[in-house]
Image (tube, rainbow, N blue to C red; front, side):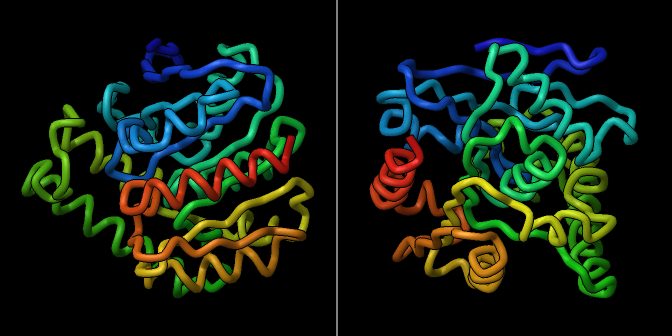
Length: 250
């Protein structure tokens, strides 16, 4: 495990596995950490290196006090810097929920660094201003709960984080969305793309259908019995589908 210094903000990451297949980077969802990929790493690192990392404010990464350090653009820049630090020019870029959205945003800005996309239980944002505002209102309400209740507002494994305030700032600055650039970029994606979604992930089933319809050549897979965290809910199915996709990518 290592830390990358991003202008005073330490970003935790780890490179697991080895081999001559395309490297992969996995970005976790909001309120989670790189630990969420534990059920998948043994299967995915059999023949390739896989980078997992903690977004700023999450897990073992720093949680700076300045709100303006928490932006989607900062995360995109962090991801590019991680690839540089690992000496990786081009990789399979994947993520779940917020991590999937950031993967799409990264692909829009750095298409030359993306060999393929693995998008898990995620969506591309909104064209409609009202729908985007409703999403942002929910994100800001979550930030308020974290500030008033602490990490208990997240539920799940609270021990993976050190700062409820950092997660709250991430909700205000990284989870909120401000334009339609990501959703409008989907038809321009020109790399193999796998869209995964849990069959019980009702809020994201429609988003997965949309991604698969708008990204040229995208392959969509529904993980039966899984909810929003499909890689944890049904790891055997998830691992098999991702490994099969990666084998076809090369």
